[in-house]
Image 1 (cartoon, rainbow, N blue to C red):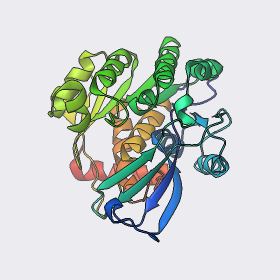
Image 2 (tube, rainbow, N blue to C red):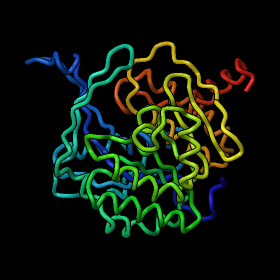
Image 3 (cartoon, rainbow, N blue to C red):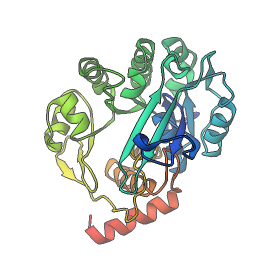
Image 4 (cartoon, helix red, strand yellow):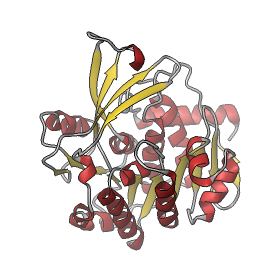
Length: 327
């Protein structure tokens, strides 16, 4: 998918940015004096950072709060190569989450999102970004964004329709979160947005069981394509990645990370990288290969944006994986 003439950005990312508090102990062991590290994440920022690292001109479309953390939050996004000039303010606090991860990559989360700035995302914001959405090459959004509030759901659908109607590419990850929404609403949103997507990335068994009633990756991919998605990627744990582009479902090689630290944001890194490479003209299989390599590298870091690999490193790992597997 080549960039369209005059497109101001290769990739836009619509969603939520969060303050990340990384605890130095499992959450059920956090006590007075437990050390913690503050960073910035959220699926939209994670994906945007990955897209920028993969070489795409990338902008974040989000609503941030009016608390003291907004300045460092936006500064961190800019440091990651993401254009934040289109972010809108709201007189609300920023959302936050507390994270703990062990050396095997297992994770625990506690979120504070009620009445957050990010949850005020609405169709009026999308309308203010109409020119960007109809001119840029690709948009990334997610089921998390659609589950933040009724207005956020409407915003996701409005943006998806704008991009699709203008001939742009849409990448969507259902990212089902039962603390944010129920299965019925998540399924309805997936059914409405799947026909607009160029790439739908989902996980199995978690998302697949909740949204398409299966724990089999190939069946999950087929059911998502039956909803109208043009191409589907199903991640199914370490080393398992299925691509179904309508010409058949096939497993793609996934580079193994020998020292995983934290898988937070790995799926977002995958989506951001794949979308960036599609927007820059790579074919689907090649874009997915790069995305798998970037996601593998990302789990060496702590937090959602703790490890955003440069594209040269991603490409080198993808090439080594191809030499080893012959694919």
